[in-house]
Image 1: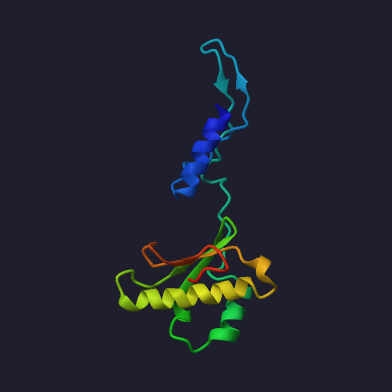
Image 2: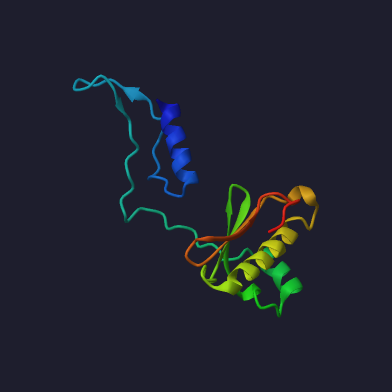
Length: 148
């Protein structure tokens, strides 16, 4: 049962709609009212909850790379955030999916991020996804031999 629950959580996570975290390692304990229940960790009260770490929208080393190599381009300012997702760089932009120029800008962003990934060697390439402000995928590259 634990494997099934873990598989469901993994599928939902990949789909981008993961449920609240569940302790899948908790041991079942028999009680008088049921044959087995799960020990659950107590939830932290809102006042004791740790604040989420504030992350940079674009990592400093990537921002430096873009500044040194692409200052003055029309597309670089459209990059609003870069997150790691399964080792791939997922780029969020302010581009509109229905804008005819968005695809061209997204391809240039994809190429630039790919170049950043392989600056120390081809084995550094992990993949790139560029999305519109709405989250719609505009460009991607899963393999270094492919184009954006």
